[in-house]
Image (cartoon, rainbow, N blue to C red; front, top):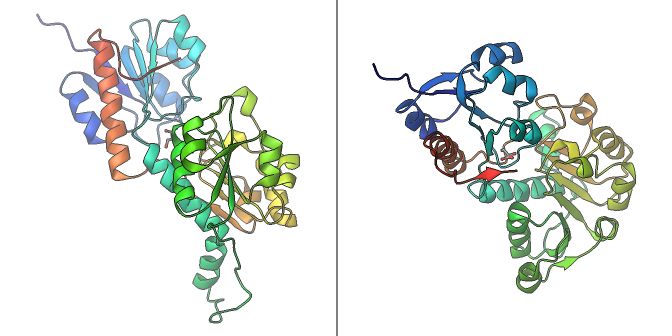
Amino acid sequence: MSASPPIVVIARLLLPAGLESLRARYEVREGGLDVTREQLLELVPGAAALVADPTVPVDAELLNACGEQLRVVANFAVGYDNIDLAACAERRVIVTNTPEVLTEATAELALALTLAAARRMSDAERDLRAGRWRGLEPAAYLGLELRGATVGVVGLGRIGGRYAALVSSVGAEVLYTGHNPKPEAERELGARRLELGELLAASDVVSLHAPSAPETHHLIGEAELELIGPEGVLVNTARGSLVDAEALAGALERGTLGGAGLDVYEDEPDVPASLLAAPRCVLLPHIGSATVTSRNAMARLVAENVIAVLEGREPPDPVG
Ligand code: DGY
């Protein structure tokens, strides 16, 4: 009698680009987009692999529910702040992510949000749709031109680096923060490294590309927003926890911050009511990596990581 195949649990949903190769080898169980925590806890017992995404907290309780045969948690994302790495390590569970393949998509979205927020596109579109447009208004919706603007990149990693190259290509000057100097960006883009406070004060646009971690929690609060100032724009495509949302909404409301473009929120999918009501604020539903190319490649990478671990090989993208 042949042994039954290992069980792979997809906590929510995986695109066919990755799902099919998993289905061909394993017993695959899927939670679906609206899976509740209770349903997930009932779905995972016996799993050898768990496929998660940023909305799925992978903690000790979920790992225990999976059982001792769990070998890998494969995250459908480059960020893995939803996963308790220590709890995985204690249980000798390998964690993987999907780097590189979403760099371009996310950097492009950060550029799109920069332009949308700098040019007040949300307010303008809302007014047009509501029938409030009175024809070309010489003094309305005046925004910031990116050419000649100073853009501060907080975290010049893969995505931040690509975003810096994109804004530089339209003529912006690039500043950056980070633990280490980036000689290549300094050489090729003329980027200058500054301390966070100096960067915030000197930038017309500040774009966040740092990971979520205890030391980056509410990195941008009231004092930092004041440094960016009434003409400045804040863009966040990294993680919601980097920004104190109430402070941000207050600054937009008072006009002490020029504008904001957000793709991520601290408690997704909840978006604070104060942000929904705030002026000069473009809000997107975490679509940084949402291109056909990127999402298919992420799904393939998830499957490759799962298959590698279950076949006893080193996965391409281990983290932690
Ligand atoms: C990531 O990969 O971390 C993104 O936020 C998902 O789109």
